[in-house]
Length: 310
Image (cartoon, helix red, strand yellow):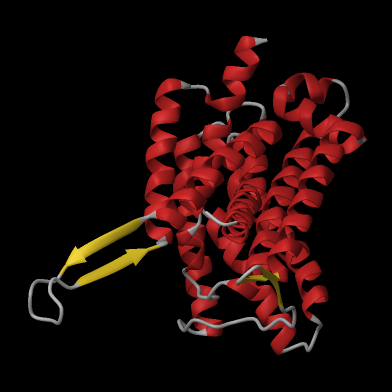
């Protein structure tokens, strides 16, 4: 393997980790911290992408402004959803799952009516840089930088701010937090809105590099849940560790999955061979299998194993 090929593999691994971190951040707050199985999470992601599409095409906003608007819009939708649908159902996880599933179907229907069922794209102006004989998009480096900033900001928010301390207290023990004067319904609402806003930001960030379609969230929600579950109980550290391990496996298998098909003797010279390699499909299958094996060995996830070993 040449140096340029090794460098490209490293960049692909970094990009795979970045995407998993972005997908898992919002879910780490809603599912990892609040223990709410929100089946509308993928629609928050989709809504963020379509907010960018609408803001750039209809309102004429610059792409960066539309991306900043997306988490605000989706966070607002999450707050409304928490107040109207989820709040009466706390402590009833199956009812929450059914309710959020219904909301997800509603959101997909509304988005389809407004934008249509066709795949659309969000144009952006960044180019590529050379790595030996290869080209690599500059935007993917921007994505990695933004993902690192979001992770650091979320850590600082919950670790060092009054909001973070109240949110953690509310989630850990709502009754005690309420006895200490914390407005627990408000904290649940804002925390859920934060998780929705992070999902909207992810959709906005990924919109320029994926096809924007009303059902796009379903393609990513499984990887988001896998990343958070494999990460374990220490939400942010576990999410980063899980994304790093799973992203490495996914990128490695996607890069080197190579299959050769023998086509017989009807060619010159026989036998003919067709090589199929570098498939993202095999990378995602490898990610799923590895996650199942890892959870079998570490039922509490990566961070649960590390906490038990301390």
